[in-house]
Length: 217
Image 1 (cartoon, helix red, strand yellow):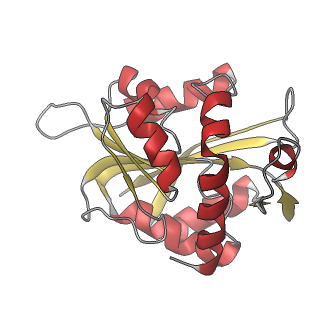
Image 2: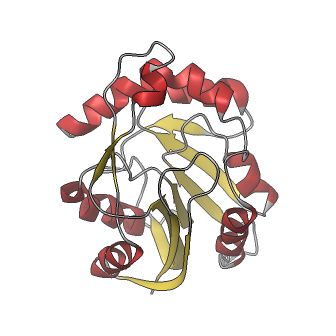
């Protein structure tokens, strides 16, 4: 685990219960976001005809696990924060979830039909991005897909303000990337970009939002 990840883990351990109570399901997502997730699952196939296996890499408290399952995936989760996984065990006990880091996923190579990263790369600096994307590609079988969602833009933002207002003295940085930069980074680890979404910020969002789906050829 990198030094940056130690700080991110500490921050999310601190705010896990607040986060889990505020983000219980897909209230924060727009219909087009959910449509991209459904499209991602529809691209996945299993050789034996079973439900495709999907890793929710950075699952947090597990709020996206039921959605992925509803769209037809056999899904499990991994997250950096033990406190988040504690909430996932409590709130979504029907799914397998475990503690682990995106820079060294605790899963076998080619063990999933798809890897799903919903805003889970955003707290790592650009120097970590190639390693995280390579890990997502590593655990994905040939013909499978990787989905990455993130705030679109450039530079860094302080992501701790809303938590500090609620009494949590944490430090949390969000790193922005353009869809072009994320697409190029995915291609660098051997993936082929097959779908992209970029939409303007709505509601309380501060930046445009982006989703990129890439296939492991």
